[in-house]
Structures are given as C-alpha cells and as structure tokens.
Amino acid sequence: MKNLTLPNYEDVAAAAERIKDFINKTPVLTSRTVNNEFEAEVFFKCENFQRVGAFKFRGAMNALLQFNETQKKAGVVAFSSGNHAQAIALSSKILGIPATIIMPKDAPAAKMAATREYGGNIVEFDRYTEDREKLEKRLLKKMV
Image 1 (cartoon, one colour):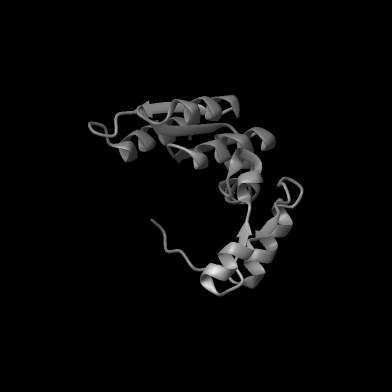
Image 2: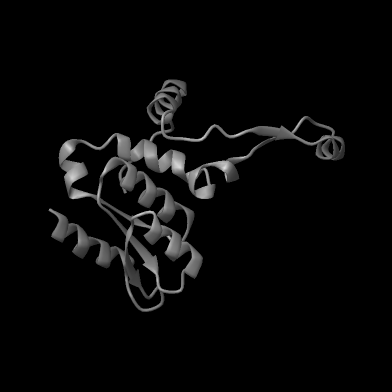
C-alpha cells in the first residue's frame, strides 16, 4: 500500500466541488431526545438518502473523477461485499468506466444483485480458500 496522507481543508473542498453534480444533498437532522440524553447538540448526517444508500458513493465518485484517460479505459477493480461495491459500480456506470468488483461468494444476495444492477461486473471468490489479492493481480494483468 502506498503512503497515505490526511486530506487538508483544500483537499476536502476540491472533492466537494468535483462531486457536487453527482450526489444527492442529504439532510442534517437533530433530536431533542438525543441532545438531552448526551447533554450536547448532536447532528445526524443522513447519508442513507445518498445514492446507493451510503456515504461510500461520495468517495467512489471522487476517486473515479480523478482517473486519467488511460485509467478510465482500463477500468477499476475493487474489493467489497457491500456498499463500496455498489458505490463503485454506480459511479463507474455514470462515468462510463468498466468496473470489476471482487466479492466473496457469501456476500449478501441483495448486495450482489444491487451491484450487478448498478453495472458492476462481479468476480466471486471463496474468502476461506482463495486469496483475493492474487485474484486481483490476475485481473489487473488482463486489464493492462
């Protein structure tokens, strides 16, 4: 894994600008009951109203919007058994980027179905007997 650095304010602002035309604006709610319980003002960002029902769409879209033309043509490979799979699949479909999602065979059927419906090509693996990183390397060799 490459070295990662924490984003600064400018990075976050740039990401927000990149994805603004693709995301749903989700509400921020409060609860008097929760506020009273914790003696604090608590805010809930309702990302369940986001596309694919999760905040993961924001990150997936932001990442794919930064692909260069060569990367777009090659496509994206991701590991996930749930929301990230769906987020990559939908973001890829919107942007016209081929998406291969490596999912465990025992992932929830609803998650697999949604990922396929969003346009993801699923490659299944057995999490107990197969090495997903080796599978990824084989897939990436085919893409190049």
